[in-house]
Length: 219
Length: 248
Image 1 (cartoon, each protein chain N blue to C red):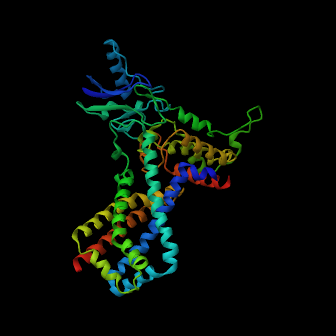
Image 2 (cartoon, rainbow over the protein chains, first blue to last red):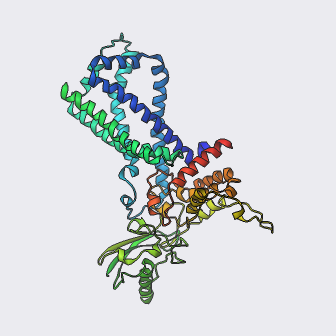
Image 3 (spheres, one colour):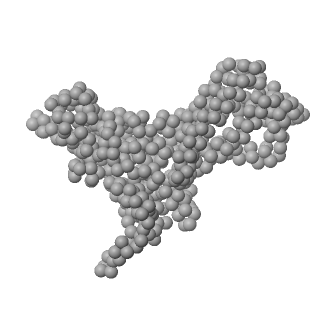
C-alpha cells in the first residue's frame, strides 16, 4: 500500500480521479448556469440553494476546492518531473508527427484554466464570501442573477471567459479518455469513451461560452 | 541524392556534445539509413577523422540496437520499422537530416549516437521472467491450455524488442510502454500469473528508480513503436499495479 502512494502510476491515478471529479462538477456548474438563460427566477432559486445549503457550503465546497488545488499542484509536480526525465533536450523534436497538440500541452491548457479560475474566484467566489461571511449581509435570494449579468457587461471579460473555455475544451479533449486509460480501462468500451469524451469536451465549454455571450448581448 | 547531415557528436559521457554538419553525395535511394552512415564513416576514416559511432547489430529489425532520433522522430519518418529498415527513398535530394541519440536521463549518451539502455535491462531483471525449475522435470508449456485471445495478446506484447523508441518519442521520456509490454506478456498467461503481483510492483518500482517520466497518454510511443505495441498494455499494467498494491 505504501508503494501505491509514492509511485508514478499512483500519481497518474490520483490525477485521473481528481480530473474525473472536476468533470462531474462541471456538469453541475453548467446545469445551474444554463438556468440563467431560461429564467432569472430559476437561476436565483438554484443559486440561493447552493449558496445557503449547509451540506454544499460546509462539505462539498471544501472538497471541491481541495480537488481543484490537488489537480493543479499534482499536475505541475508531474510536469517538472517529466521535464527532468528528458535530461538533454532534442535539437529537433517532431511531436506533431505522432500525437495531438491537446495531449502534449495539457500543462498550457491547464495553466490557462488556472489563470481563469483566479479571475473567476475574484469575480464571484471572493465577493460571495465577503457578502455572506465577512460583511454578514442579510441573505437576498434575488441578487444572484443581477450579479451574473453584471459581470458579462464587459466585452473584455466576456472574451477572456470564452478564450479560457476554448482552452478548457482542449484540456478535456485529451483529459477525459486519458483518465480512463490511466485507471486501466482500455477495452471494447474505449471507442465509446473516447467519442463521449470528445463530445463532452466540445458541448460543455461551448455551453459556457454560449451563456457568457447570451448575457453580454442581452444585458 | 546529395544530403546535408546534422549529427550529434560527443566524445564520451563526460564531454559536452554538439551538432556537426556533414555533406554526403551520391546516396542511393535503395540504401538503408545505416548503410548511408557506413558510407559517411568510410569517407570520414579516409580523411583521418573519427567515424560517427552508432549502435547496430542484426540490421533486420529484430535486435532493437539501432537507436537514432532522425528528424525529430525515433527511427525516422516511416512507421513500424527500426532505423536499419529505414530506406533513403524516404528522403529527397537536397534534404537536411538531423540525427541525434535517443534522449532520456535514464539513457545517458556513451559516445556520439550510442546511448546506455541498461536501465531497460534492470527493469527486466526486476521481474520480467517466470521462475521455472529446469532441472530435468520441466513441464511442456503447451500442456497448459491457454485461450487463443490471451495467447495472441501475450504474443503481441512479447514482440517488444526493447529498442527504447517509446522513451525517445515520449515528451516525458516515459518507459511505461516497454515496462507494460513486459508485464503484460506474463500477466496474460497462466505461467506468469503465479508471480504477477510481485512482478508488477517490482518492475514499476525499478522503472521509477531509473528516472523515467510519467505517462500522459499522448500515444506517441504506440505510433513510433517498430512492433506496434499497444497502449492497451499500459492500461493493463496500471490495472495490475493498482490490484497488486491493494493486495500488498
